[in-house]
Image (cartoon, rainbow, N blue to C red; front, side):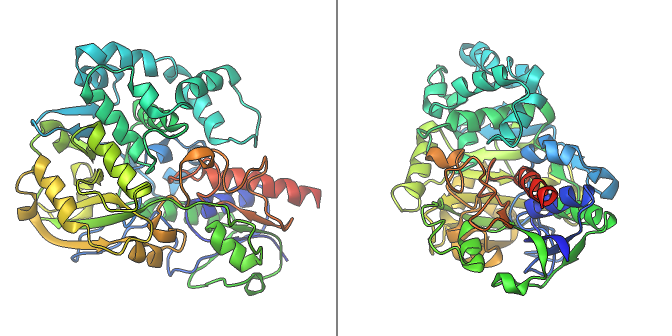
Length: 469
């Protein structure tokens, strides 16, 4: 009998398996797709030689993850590549605000009236970032906070809505960039704890950047899988699990799946019916005949580029997708351009480009024209560079990855109390109604992102049970 079976080979499932195998437990992973990866894959979606990331591409939470940093993933081929700028936010006048590794450079891009305000906001947390991020990403209490005072100060700054925090800024440049940071998790700007979301992304950039993985995001999953195999773990692909009886006998079962899928497989009935899924996304992967022709010079050297003319436009787009059940006319966009640091992703002189906007859950329309009209506002002539595009709306995303219910790439709404208390109100969110069954997906704390911490935290709950039985 195995000690543990993990269902789903995304970053959280693989991390949970690695953590258990490192402690001497026998582990097997079962994945429905033909390769490991989940939301961290790389595929040729458009033309031969163009390698795209179907979901996650830039990894501010990955490079800062306490779980990943404790593992020897570099030995297994993971290499973080850093663009000259982690992120740029261009404006229609050809200028840009930036999120740089340097706090001073970032503050200067906001203008003199807000530079000091930004420095006072982020600088107190940076010296204690490693402790803060461990405490923040381990919540709820899988371990006691190492620095409860700093964590409490962070909570005071971050738990109010992001609009309260940005009210400190006097000019639109800082407000717009910060609104875009909150938009990465598709949360309405006025929601609970959205200030914390923006702060985490900003602090992550100043601490270690927003890198890409050389060769694509698949490199993260492949490194985790290779390490797991060296530890004696097994991985079975092309193995769809429809019920618990499909799995071999084990002392514990760990699911890197949506709560909906877990309830269906394990027979938990309506246990997770109160869990809310968020808006979907409409994503386009481009093969380009050269770099994106950004008007703003800063955007040409940034790994990630946010698209939204101002904070009002961003707020309207997020509200349309999450509350008004309609596609925005001017979507807020997140784009990634791997070619600024990784020439392996496309043939010489060509580029891959990654872009998405938010749409209502399950939306079946085509947002291509609206997204490209937005791009043309900040990069005139963009459409002339397009060699091929691969589009995916909510139905296609959900078909590609069953965790993306309704096209929600976060596997659950990041709004209200569900930002922290997911998938249910519980001090042990990784446990389920069955004492031997656990959940470790992004539906559990700390939530979305390629960081493995949900798997790491869940593994703690699993090995405590295994040692007691």
